[in-house]
Length: 545
Image (cartoon, rainbow, N blue to C red; front, side, top):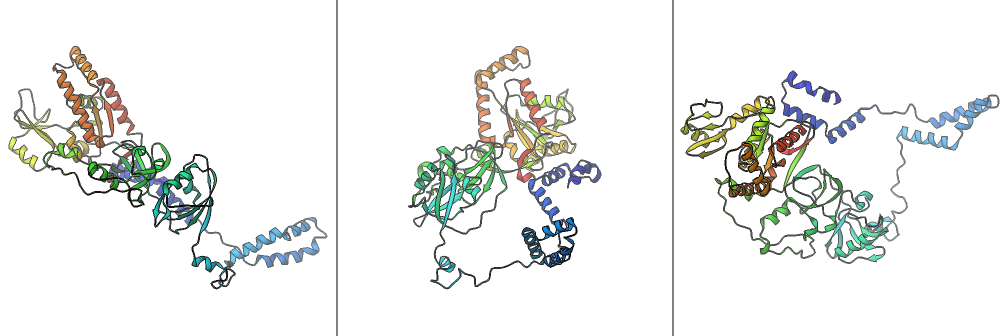
């Protein structure tokens, strides 16, 4: 595998392999799972140790008899004779012979403890309840990482948080019934039990009825969060102390999906403990249901649940993409960690007048070998100083309308009686040249672009606060960089539009840069783009598999 990884940079020219295929291959071979499997395979291929011979105890007895006479004449023979007669050496030989002959001693079926019922043997225990006494060591203030539920009047372990004190000690399992804590019987009160365990320190003795269930399989799912979560304000969570807070844009590793309402996860960037987060199903119910139409109070011993059937009704019009996007529910997105690679497209999103086009032009001029843009199409007639395929591709209106209906355009619109648009094949032509295609499209086009074919890196150019925006406009007028006079109302609309775009399409953005000055914003843009060639990147899992 090391030789293959070293040869990967030479494969594109030698075998005609695609860059994306090589990126996927490198990410696959460098993943911890594949590396572990390779080590296991190497270990299995190692030659097995075999015994040279069996019955070595008899051989040593013969050597001792032969050396008995020589030991009186030779000191070295006497020393060897003493070593061979040592009890520890004799025991070592017996173990070696047992392993070499594979004659391991087995317990007979008629051993003590397996007598008839009533004899006090093990069978009486198996016929009754096999109660175990478990001792747990707990540090003062340390969370145990366990929650409970009521089942038939008994307290049952509902979940064990990965990495917690209970999980590390491995003495309790999901489904175990708690009968006593430090000699006191436990009633059907999970909150009281959790409080008593939280306040306890040192040795905690539990009497449990084991469930004998197999431990769950550890998950290797990574998700990007598209909403903020604070467990301290969530009244549905079984245990607020066990909750894990996160912010929009953070990546979580889901370590357990056993509970349909509460996943166990840890933060990839910050590391740390495993905690409870709402599942996709539970959070969708909370987002889709009207809060005033149902009661969220847990009932019947259930520690989490959603009641009620009344849903929010809304009419969606497919032609109005912006209105449809405002009501889209995107909570978690499964992602994969990829090695550094150059994205195929760079998409600059922002409100009108925020500086997207200026940044695009400066980027292409600064590095034309790496970045290039498309030539837009229009149905208007060319002016005297315009040439076809330089600033615009001039197309007949009827042909452009037919291509729009056929889906040949990434985006299109009408201004002053003329059609304007960007063809999809123009984006593909730039990508096929090996450059990154720079686009400053409307945010509605992100749904078409965010696929494995285009692999976009989406940068949101956010408008600064209104006061800063007004000052920037005055500086532009004084410097002569712009001659378009904007009123305070125009600048206010720009700020409001920027906030609306971020709220509606923020889950598509890879990075957000606030434009408080074109020079400084361009430097920040170059920094984040250069990091793509250095850092691993979290991308949608659909781009990889």
